[in-house]
Length: 55
Image 1 (cartoon, one colour):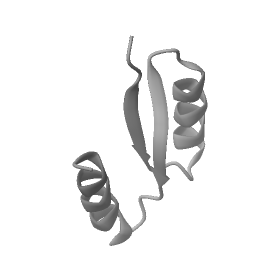
Image 2 (cartoon, rainbow, N blue to C red):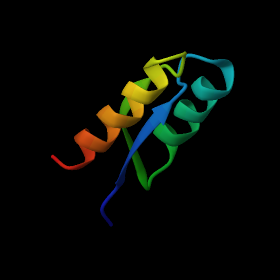
Image 3 (cartoon, one colour):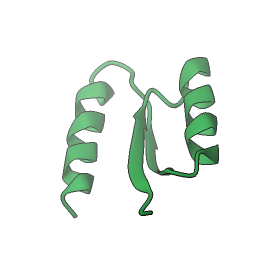
Image 4 (spheres, one colour):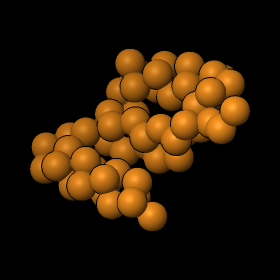
């Protein structure tokens, strides 16, 4: 089965780090991008993830 690509917004916080760890150990997911979710960066992060997914 193909692994699904996952991006995590807010990966610098405690919950985000735990989420990245859980996803990276899951057999069906591949973490391809982790970005912070602070202030204006949140908008840019979502845009970069959307752009990345179309590659």
